[in-house]
Length: 553
Image (cartoon, rainbow, N blue to C red):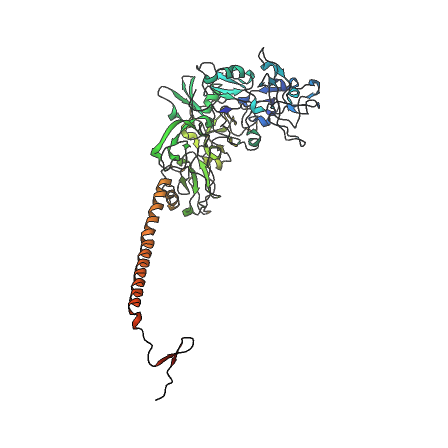
């Protein structure tokens, strides 16, 4: 067994293509749902976030009272199968969205296993419809295991060479399908764990980014070896191919959130995992670590954190405003200041996790127009010179994000396949693009004119020189506060010691001296008590008060 648990992944889904308009008209659980003249499109051939999420996939309803009017996948799951409604607008793979209910969608069982259909049962197992499971724990979509598609020429099967899938129909030509039962029987050799959805999918459904980074890969010839975000991650003897080139080979790229990263190991750090050395307070203390991914620490599920580009107050900006980035080179020189990764602070410093982190993109031509795909740096592009920073991408109305929002309730990170398989384009109005032909020298559009800077009278250089940015007093001041808790504790103890010496000791000496003086006075009074006399010219009244002497001459 590995030293850390395998994260649970969930599949993308296919859709029905209108051949006339070229648009996906509906998402589909399987090809049988796309009747003529619609044509089924495989899950990873659909661009953008369309059909990428279990909550987007419509299913049916058992309308009989015996089956309690539940949402489910097929008539086989209903006790009264004749009362099954194949498509219900209020039902998705995840939940019943009707106004009368907020319940989950439910699924049948084979023996004690949660499944999709009777075909998933072994010979020795009994199929149980949902209505017969009243006294049992219900099966929800996050309880349903699925299979994987895996590359034929990679052995043993790895996480990089496989992705979750509902059926064989979603595997590209160069992939084979392994069903859920066979996958689970691999036990410790299982490359990844797949379920139909995850517990957080209800929350995530409304939070999907349209375009996220997909990793490229390292190849020997056209034979896949491993996933990589940048060409520098490929070992000697291999060649890097961008995510577009991976798709040109009819293969499915890895999403960025699966890629192994590293840790900030200094005791001065606020964070654990991050994408690269620039994310650390002390960059020299960054170390690659297999438990860290772009998304999180696989052992602890603590989110990976990233740096940010903050507006410079010296240039008229609001230093409280920032955008999360992969590296310092994403910041516009002089206008923005790079801050290393850190924990959120009150209501003025928000977290920079992968789902908040903007990236740049690579421009290329499909022979008709200029298109873009997301990448973390120019080293993730087929042609590094085609790279546009996140600032430049925003200026032309395009936004790339490092990963999808996939964390809540302490859930595991969701891994391959990508939840935003934009494939070879970012913006194509939901249409299925042709396979791109990448020319050696893409012809991107001219560099965009950057957005207005915080000072209306000045504009940033469209393609800023990526020289190291000198930190302003804002950065230095903030960074100086990022000290190790042990150091802070030592300083605090020292301060208390100084206060004790300056204040407490003098007071103690003063009290001692006063006490000694009082004892001396009392001793003197005791010795002279018998010699006290009333003056001859003073008398005492009845109350003991002195009065002037009124005697005669």
